[in-house]
Amino acid sequence: MNRSLIILLGALALGAGIFAGSYFTAQRATVMCCTRPADDLSWLQDEFHLSDTEMKRVRELHEGYLPKCAEMCGKIATKKGELDSLLGNGTNLTAEAQAKLNDIAGLRAQCQAQMLQHFLTVSQVMPPEQGQRYLAEMKRLTLGTNGLMKPFMSDHAGHEHGNN
Picture 1: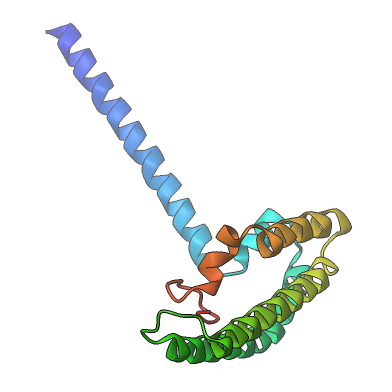
Picture 2: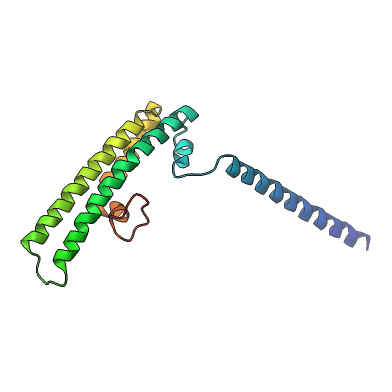
């Protein structure tokens, strides 16, 4: 009986220790999340080890770029709507529809150029090594295969700056 009581008390103590450790870990994680709320740019500060000053400048650049991005997305969406109207239920690609496709391709190229310029500017406010790493990743995503850009350029994406 004495041995059973020791095992039971040991199991209770172990369970209480695990519970307390889990509780305090969860509390700490909650406090950290609440004192520094996540946003769409917070990953940059962590990933590229940016100071608060550098992060402030990145946010300013991002906010300045958003209207340009929204404008470009709107232009592309408009041209895609025009193309959809031209295609209708037809079975042939007309010269007018081909011209709209070319317009869309030109707008997408212009969009990529604007994104790359934005990424270059952002990389320059980072420490040099981190800026180079950031720029390499953004180039990969921006200039990568069509499969990488497709979520940002389709009507089905949850892209917050526009669906194009």
